[in-house]
Image 1 (cartoon, one colour):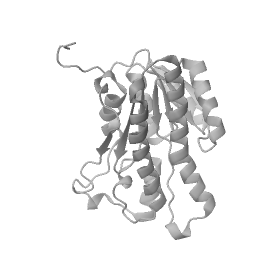
Image 2 (tube, helix red, strand yellow):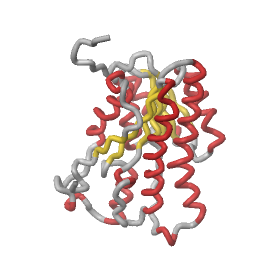
Image 3 (tube, helix red, strand yellow):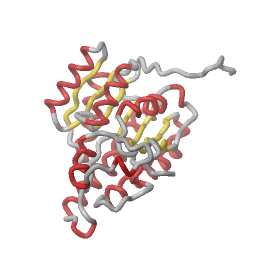
Length: 257
């Protein structure tokens, strides 16, 4: 059926979104953006006090939100987190796998406990959560949107003591591509955003270790989280109905390509 141009809508009214790593940084911004577009947002993270403040902020702005306290490194807690989100706000139709941690170590110096933690949070958690949400959508016969937050480190490792982080984000890219194929026939779109260096608590920690990196970039600046708004909203909205298995690189030309 021919649609009048432009075929664009960012209205998320009636959708329930679950955002992990929502207590700070990009996740906090993503939750606020989705709520501003009309979605009911379940904000998930470990720090309950920060989640409560975020929920209050969203409610004050006229949105709808609920906190979900969860440590995504604990795989057995992930299904319960989806249960809690759906009990508070209704069936989840948008999942943003944002939670992630750095390794901050040279590969040969990493203890096994840190290796496990990085892989548990950055790879296992988004895979398990994606499967949990997809399973429920398929059973209900409903479409959905999954957005994984990868990183430009998946494509370009700078050698600054983040080898496993780079590997984990490359796994997120391939996860996005593979699950998109498996779930396409169910109307579930799986895409990813690969940010460059954007301001966040994680990046602040890296800058403390390696110093100001912005002067090495063509535009000599660090990205601002607001610059990711349009990409996120596009990937979760009706505007991207035919887009799945795609990784959108948003790095402000930092890689010099």
